[in-house]
Picture 1 (cartoon, rainbow, N blue to C red):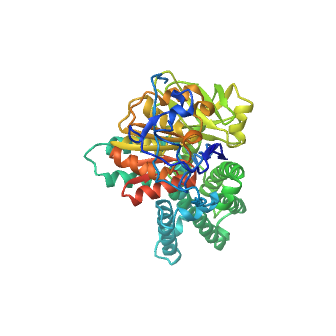
Picture 2 (picture 1 turned 60 degrees about the vertical axis):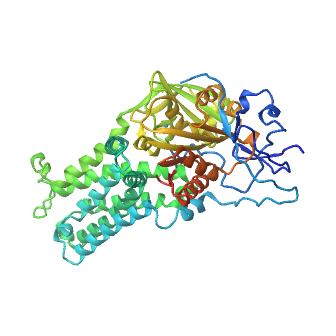
Picture 3 (picture 1 turned 45 degrees about the vertical axis):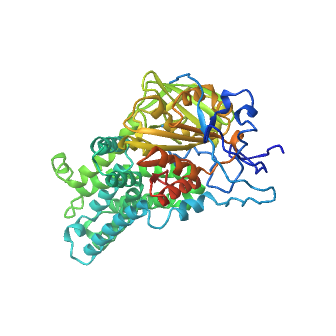
Length: 530
């Protein structure tokens, strides 16, 4: 019977066949398809038939425009592929259909009610609400007098949680201080979970800043004779912009209208920052006795906390924009499914970068492939308008941010032995760990369709020549649909991994992480708003 294939976001899987599977004489390993002239030589009928489709945790491709994620060539002999063996099945046995779940349900529901992200959000919000309640009750006089300052403090905190320069330093220190063999694994995994979930502090402080500003505005209106209309108007406008930003960031709206969220968040934030300076200068310069602004002197200004908080917020918001450059690039499209963008300068492993055609409109984050020497590349799967445009209309120049940011992949350097799992174009964020020395010993699993056909000869050669126990490539067009969760658990046990890091779509990442945790293996994957 000829195998049949179905497609899902660029990855094909084999529909269940009736062939029986016999153990391969060489164990569970067979040669990769690109080293053989025909599939029959990859899987000899006398030794091993194609794997059958199963109801599994298989996922398709990685949405490059989320990394919500995200940022050489050694040509040597063949790479080897692990094929999962399944018990014989009869032709009449029906294969359960995989669950069809919406991306939104996975984001909102399947990550659980008590994730680290949500706990950080709750801690920030509860602390702020407690202080606010004490201020209202008259037991925290300082907060009652400086309610607007507490709102600014929350804005500064949420800005630091998203500052690429600050996070680069924080991640670097975490790796340097904790990336030692004698540091307990529990501390490393707790640190990884915390750093991956800083978005919880960002969103918790965002909501709290609105609450504090509402309180400050209420107090101002109660003492209307001690302020001016301009101060009230500025505070009201800032409040409206902050509330709009929080509303646009609500998971449902952010998921359904991501571009609108990004632009609203950016331009509302910039407008609020400009108005914050107006508010601070008016407030510190206003004299209630004369109802004029004759108190605004630089010597007085630098003594006020509000001034320094506003200055710090401005500095960390402006900093990444000072590194924006328009650089020449070379874009190659090995297929209609992906493009490879080449830049100058080598980059260390684990970092991600942001690129844009229109820097004031939108930015997209991608993993970086580099041997650490002459240059680096980004592999962009054609899954959205921006990435499809790279294939259909490749640019000669792109805007980039000079500060590459550290994310979950960078923390691989904190561990000794790690299993990395990628699907589709998600491989880009992990390839640098194979091409240049890193602190951790890694085992890489890649589930994809048609390596050379979809990703080009260059990517294929980067994957080649590594020890069979270190690199596992599963081509779904040849080997069928695997149970990636089980494959990962088995590889982690065989590799004696301290941790598993997966990069895929929400359902795939969730399934792998869940399976690993059930097996007692620490595992991390991209989370919403990570």
